[in-house]
Amino acid sequence: MHLHTDSFYVWIRTGFVPPYLPEAARQNEVVLGVIAEAACGYARGDFDVVLDGVVGPWALQPFREAAKRDGLDLYYVVLRPSLEATLARGTAREAKELVDVEPLKGMHAAFVGLGALERHVMDTTEQAAEETADAVRRRARSAAFAL
Image (tube, rainbow, N blue to C red):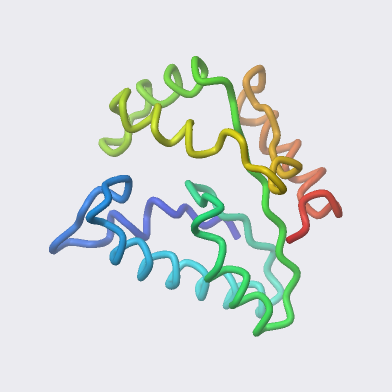
């Protein structure tokens, strides 16, 4: 199951706040809780679930709680290309959201220096999307990425 986290945000029709803005804190809390429940629901149904989107260390708690409650294993992989690659890929996106340079720089900076979570990082600077997907499939369930 491939869950795009962006979908959960763009489904908001009234009162949407871009999730990278400080005033989106409550919206983000609700959306992340819904994503965690959806992911665990699929996992309880014996689906392998991959979240595709921005899930920073600040957003892990609802996933940890839901996985623990349901007795599920939880793995965390941070795809972190260089800033240059991030900007090139981000500004070339066809989506309307998160294509401006300043928010992209902010998102990149949020994933630098992750401390204990640094072991969850995969440098994807030189990889095409398909190569990254293959690498995640091969390595995602390794002990290095377990939470």
